Length: 152
Image: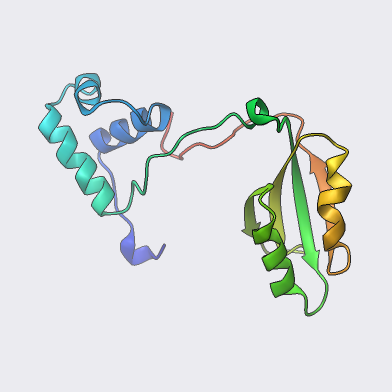
């Protein structure tokens, strides 16, 4: 995102975003009632937030432990010289990496990996050992899963 494309939001827009963050499936009518506005006005504000790409999509929040992935690991990855693109390809092709950020500092990537058991960790990271150094931490609990900065 560039600075030219930033927008300021008023209190009503912030209320809408906060409610949608909690319940993305709320109806326009219910949303309008919660913020004491008409449904057409709320619908217009939603269209404006989408056209500005402030709201990019509506998603679901899946409990991965219910699908057999009770563990998460944070993996710091430092590619060996000349192996950056190969490591990127490997990260992108392993579906167990559910997020990955390119970062500054000693490591190039910080990724989140989901696991069925701790026994899987070596098997999933072994292909990286020829082209990168990895450092892994198991997530014990999450203080903040994901939140938007405007929520209270």
